[in-house]
Image (cartoon, rainbow, N blue to C red):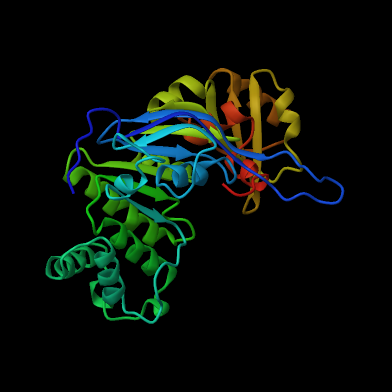
Length: 340
């Protein structure tokens, strides 16, 4: 497949998607749920673009609109210069999508048989398709499992197979929806490594990744948009986001076990305190107005006989950016989220 759009690889303007919900005896006409609330973004060809947000923020809804699985309620979206509504079939010929945790295909088939079946859906000739399947299976470490039934694969193996399936047609635009969700550390690392190599192998390939893993977005993406409650609230390179949005200084202190640390928020210069039990002690993550405020924290802890075991200054992370913009940590937002 070959594609070189003159404009953005992905172009979204004022996109809205709402869902009707079933009425009840008490509420016969409930208000629709707004999953996307006026989203606009551009992704140029060759960019690895990340969409970061908690469960229920609208990430999966947006990606489903872009791959023509959902119709927008209003607004517009173009992929490879093509309208996702009026030119849906042409869009599908130029993209591929891989979702985390999907169970596509038939468990009775072997890995190689299932991938060959999908290659026929893509219209690939059998000989070149089988050769490409074997090459990709070697790359992701599944070649020795090629004759194994899909039903016998582990979650990590199945996700690697799904990635191979998405890469079979060699798409110019690849959509990855939480591709490493539920995987162990080693399997997730393998998948991220191959995705990086794949996009670098040919300039112009474009990837849109949705994730709620901060480290994944920071490691892979050229640019990251943070989506919250259906709206894009920031969009920059990870380094720029951290510099512009996560003001203040960050420290991690390890202390003896503490019975509550909320009082530290009243210390001059302390903007936020997060306390986590660690082994037999407490880990304090502090956001301060500046480096000098740490002296006040140390004095306050000493006044309460809080022995400091270690102290480290940190550079702000995307997690800190998220807290600054949303007012809570990503895992806290996840707990309040529904579908995405």
